[in-house]
Image 1 (cartoon, rainbow, N blue to C red):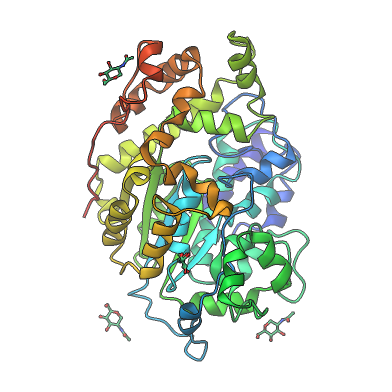
Image 2: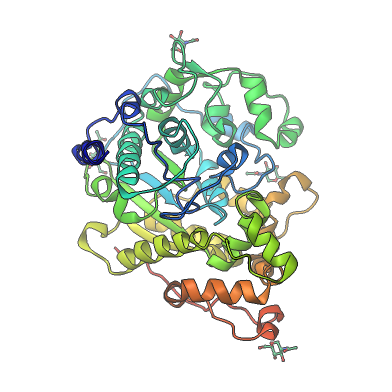
Length: 447
Ligand SMILES: *[C@@H]1O[C@H](CO)[C@@H](O)[C@H](O)[C@H]1NC(C)=O
Ligand SMILES: *[C@@H]1O[C@H](CO)[C@@H](O)[C@H](O)[C@H]1NC(C)=O
Ligand SMILES: *[C@@H]1O[C@H](CO)[C@@H](O)[C@H](O)[C@H]1NC(C)=O
Ligand SMILES: *[C@@H]1O[C@H](CO)[C@@H](O)[C@H](O)[C@H]1NC(C)=O
């Protein structure tokens, strides 16, 4: 056993295209690293249902967005396939580094709605699934390294629009570069618009009704990966959202690659808010937390690692980011979910300014439509947190018991201080929503 773990570490360090087949030979002890980075505690038993594995990376259990939306103005901006060559030096690659239930779907939309950005939603889902044929039993450093090596390798390929490299992780293996099994394809607008999807999408009125991802999958047919790759090359920029990379230092090799021009947006959220949201979403994994809330007594076998991991990963990653090492110069921005919820447009402008991208009016329209000021679009209620602004970003305060909050604060104390989330000491402070627990802080990008 020792010997094969060493081999795995070496394999990871070599960081050469780690293939699924190579990994399988080591998998007598199933690779774990899950039910997700951020959910699985080190050294503790992880218990994820397949449904929850699916939900990892998904901000809402309901179907998302209107990715198939193709308003007439977008038709003109569909990429020209006659000119597949692109200016590599000008191309910006964006990574949204997040954890489950931290608002990453919303941040993803800020790029998905931009006509010049090729956006992929959680492609590392396939790496996780392929390297973990059986559900996770344990978690250790070697496994984590192998997974991260494969993840980095795939990210690099995807940014270079080599989408075929994703195929080796998709089950069943796509035939003739065609698949209907891409995870959450409908969340990516590029994959639901011409020329990748040639389905007739109807008039503008009908487009507005296309609010769920399933519509894209049903109407567009199997995904032709080769055509998707051409579209990726034709777009100016590429953005990928992931909840499967724990810390920014895990990306150092990519960030230091000048050919890649990678910029990382680390999205953070008050861990008390993440906890409250996960308890609602991952009902099996967080069953004991619900029990605690219902009975008022902490179950003795409560999985403490679930919240520890979030806070440890955030703390290490943000500490690195805020320490401003030279390798992160111009490449790292910290974004608090609560700030985005309160000032969506202003924060989005700062985000685009950091990335050096021009903010497109489609993005602005989308923000206006999906935050305060919009009404009557019930299918978009998934973003209510943002629409109802600050009050809802803090609605964990009516969802968690005082004991649960105190426990979480104890575990996450250094992180709360670092990110400017106020600790509470009395139930009265917890429920008094007129008093925000988010300190005003400015985290300037490191230029
Ligand atoms: C590519 O972009 C760089 C940086 O803006 C510019 O200096 C260069 O001339 C461009 N090359 C081409 C072929 O457009
Ligand atoms: C995918 O698209 C390519 C390029 O247009 C085409 O040559 C190929 O036949 C298509 N594959 C399938 C399975 O339709
Ligand atoms: C915003 O809403 C308006 C009116 O409902 C609609 O015409 C427009 O296409 C929407 N824009 C975006 C980007 O969602
Ligand atoms: C709630 O907080 C506000 C602002 O800190 C304070 O003025 C008010 O007295 C508090 N209300 C209660 C019921 O404690």
